[in-house]
Length: 253
Image 1 (tube, rainbow, N blue to C red):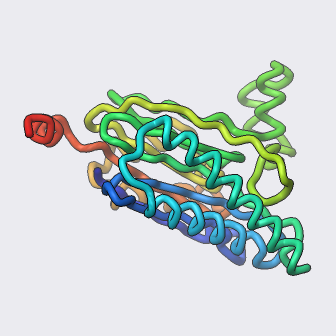
Image 2 (tube, one colour):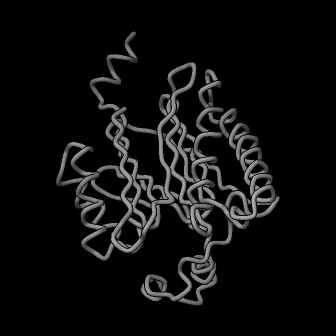
């Protein structure tokens, strides 16, 4: 699997509160994770970094994960991370109210498990089409689900950045966990809202289609988001599932 990752402060922010990384367990199975922190001063950065490394380091201790195991593991490790964030915010006054979004994908042979909390997104690109595979935990998404606003109205809604779920803010939270079947040459995009608020899905697809190397694609995505305004930190992970020839060779052994 080819992986590229990049984070950028953007144009209008003074600090970067996003964190991202890739971690590998005892069976060399990958976990890709992206966190978008929130909170005053540097509290958001503390929240996203704590969540990223607690989840990532826990993944490194696992072995032979399947979807069901990964589903159970995500529930446990995210609850542990949530509890630890709350504990820290209660210990230190300047961390009060800190929290973070999480979007993560665990890749296991021909399937993956994806977990998300908040409005950081995952997309899947297959056969020249892009599909958003997470649904934002946000006030605007709830309005969309109730057919109270249109997709166009949602893009410019004044409360579009209000999220309804996050890690570290309250004891109870909701995490969406889904199973994905993988095919050769699938590309996955994990991103903070600094990218998805600036670029339409079709623009993300066009850039990745145009630049075959993920390292170049990811640079162009961040540049385009900054050119569109760069209103927030911009963080992206791209992952391409190995091609059909490679998979056929592996399957034959």
